[in-house]
Length: 238
Image (cartoon, rainbow, N blue to C red; front, side, top):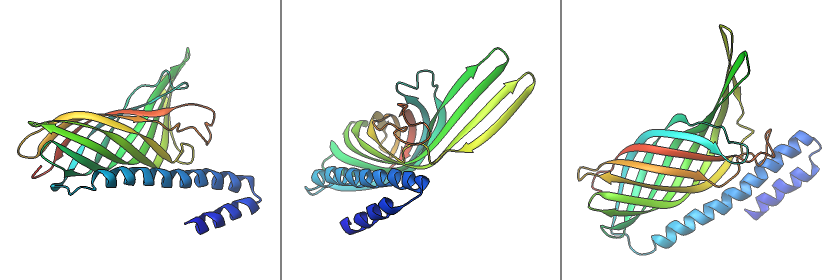
């Protein structure tokens, strides 16, 4: 791993193009951050699972994601509806406490509207992530609570801008995948109810800790992901 990283850094040093240097710098930082988070999450998972888990169950979940951006440069952002879907697994130490891990495809983002006397403009930001939370799960008589860290990997980013003037509306879509920081690190906290059949209803908050504008076209701003999720899940034998 260190040998590969040394080659990557050497190539960056000798790259003459400023555009290439910028791109390599961006992904080198993301590369380092990825392994830090990977070790952190795996460390939590293995330390908590070191004792023999009494049970392991897997299932699926899907639902609504209401996302926005928070921060110094995101005062007037509104929630944009999206979705989340994926698989979930619970490693139970006993009937009360366990560790829940998930792999979710989540559509996040925000909505921003600004108007002048004769023009109305609406920007919708779509940020599609692969979310991997590792949560401490506590369940009592069907009612459950969950809390833990979450790593999110950006898959696609798009800005949809609608400009309305008089009776004319113009819509443009722009791929901005290279602008937001490619990896987010945050936390998830939620609660819900799971029936004996394995069907569950959950409400969760996801808070991003990484500034998505750390680099890219909007470098210098401070905006972080923030979203609420309402999901249905099915975990047989839970």
